[in-house]
Amino acid sequence: MFLNIEKPDRKKIAIKDDSGYSLTYEELCHTVEELDSLNIPRSIVFCLCSNCAGSLAGYLAFENNGQVPLLLSSKLDESLRLNLEQIYQPGYYWIPDQKAEDIKGGQIEGEQVYAAYGYVLLKTAYKPYPLHESLSMLLTTSGSTGSPKLVRHKYGNLEANAENAAKAFSWTGDEVGICDLPMNYTMGLNVINSHLFAGATVLMVNANLMDPDFWEFIKDERGTSFCGVPFSYEIMRRIGFDRMDLPDLYTLAEGGGRLTDKMFKWIASYAEKNGKRFCATFGTSETSARMSFLNPKLAIEKTGSIGKAIPDGELFLIDETPDEDGTVTGELGFRGPNVTMGYALCREDLAKGDEFCGEYHTGDIAKRDADGFYYIVGRKGRFLKLFGLRVSLDETERILKMHYPGTDFVCTGDDKQMRIYTTKEELKDQIIPFISGKTNLHNSAFRVILLDEIPYNEYGKVRFEELELSTVPRQNS
Image (tube, rainbow, N blue to C red; front, top):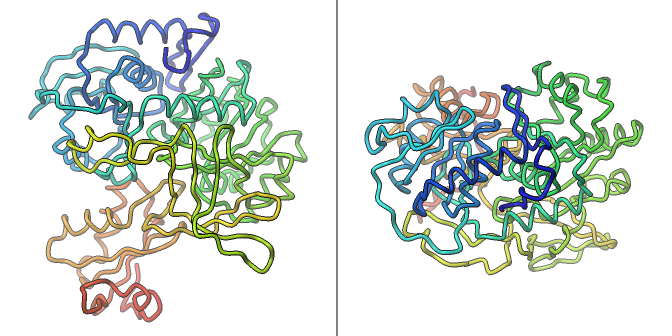
């Protein structure tokens, strides 16, 4: 079975969530087999995910049985979901049972095909269409905006990254991994996959990090490993994580964005003083999550580093430029069995073959030191990582322009805040609540800047340098 979930002790707990569900490996295998017995045709399945047993069991079954799940947030804005539905025409929906009535109607038939652990499988009226034989799973490139640009995973990608991440972390069946990141987010999915591959237990947590119930749950269930994004660790520092009594928590991992050196040192020092380990990693959806791993013994010595390639992978730099300090800088690339097939912008693209051919150029600018350790120093593409989630600036502009027709918007920013430029003063109080609702990101992730006009060159391209350097906003929000 997928991730070898039939191999561990069948009575061992595989999944336990904070809503009350607990599944053994035997029950998990039984669910996979039950769904397989339905003889569901090979088709796209929209999985509206939350961190719970039912969501995870469905994903594993579809991946194992030859359907192609597209993992989306159960909190995805309705209009964005409908846009994706129109483009990709899924054969089925796997959704929380309380959302079933909201989704029925239109092309969604009333027939409930299957139900388990608080989730239901609904059939749609869409007809099957050609899918490449190697296509195994889909993720959006920008989960918070419901971007129609998808990453096409092939069979073997997720298994390879699960196995190699498990090797890098030295996971065993005794681990109790904490999945607090969304499972439709590539790093959260890898936490699940790598622990299940090792025959460990996965705690699926929906509670917020600021909620005392979160920490009570993982302490009661003796969670051993935690993975967070930079924003996670900012919250943890704010709430006094370093003073908590969590005797079973041994591994603290980080991915999903660059920590400040100050935060990196704080976590690494905490781990060293308390007999724990801090593991910095780096990855992308296009590489099925993890590409690199920093040996926790070097966390303080190599502050800020993403480490070296995971087992069976290779990191390299494109257009290398030597620096005076002996380091080399260039665009970061990766080769390995976890590199996906490429992208899709429409359902016809799902019939395409492997366009990456085992090699991915990340668009991130990195440097490599004399010891061969890599550090991320910038980004080429128009993406931000806000609260650890990758957000497309172009996609955000599209959403704003669709909602406010005839209004010009340009988005820029950094990993702390997105800046939204516009010329319509009467919209200044509407934009942030609107885009926050669309992306499920806090209002503080956005800033609106009002201009008399957006600077363009003669080719109709935005003069970004002029926009950033010479902007004198009439009013900021």
